[in-house]
Image (cartoon, rainbow, N blue to C red; front, side):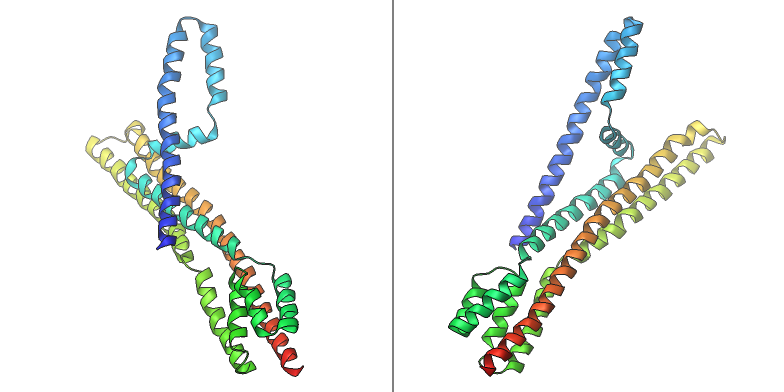
Amino acid sequence: MKKLFSIMAIAALVFAGTFTANATAAQTTPTSAQSLITAGTVSFIQDDGAATGEEEVGWHQNLKQRFIEGGPSFMGIVLLCLILGLAIAIERIIYLNLSTTNTKKLAESVEDALNSGGVDAAKEVCRNTKGPVASIYYQGLDRADESIEAAEKAVVAYGGVQMGQLEKNVSWISLFIALAPMLGFMGTVIGMILAFDKIEAAGDMNPSLVAGGIKVALLTTVFGLVVAIILQIFYNYIIAKIDSIVNSMEDASITLIDMLVDHKNK
């Protein structure tokens, strides 16, 4: 439940930032237009104002303007995919970074505690350390009094549980990666159908009748692809982070079994 609330909070923050930026741009545009009209009586002021306007309009403002031109129907859904996908991605990145531990240092601490104070001291070290590797160590040490085979089975079983925790909600990001361009393509197809309906109703192949509709239709595809590219970058980073933690878990499991075998033989 806490993770769900954190995802919703991150999504709300991303949406609030996007809404504020769009509102600021919408309020700024009429002011700039009014200032240019006021300066329209003098030609050199017009030229200077136009040059200044070209310098001030950045790629992000142009992107927001294109987004508004795309229409609220499909563009809103594509934006929702971006917000939810980013919220889940940020939550996963925070969780994975908190789950990352120095495996080598932890193994040395557990080994020293195991040699000096026994299994209970080693379990205390794992209890005071965060992360899936420390949890796997604790589960293995908790079964160490039974047998090495029991400890190994506990490590393998709990490793699968921890792997599931690491991969939680990642499939939703891949869903949004696939859904965003498909929604864009659907908006393009619908826009092209409406453009041809205008041609059929007018009975004339006038480019001015359909140019605007075709432009809006293509904008949905562009933004769908942009959303997919952004989420794909986060997705690949998350997958690489999960693979790194899983490799650390596997190495730590082998190291723990070796430590328990050496401790039993002493």
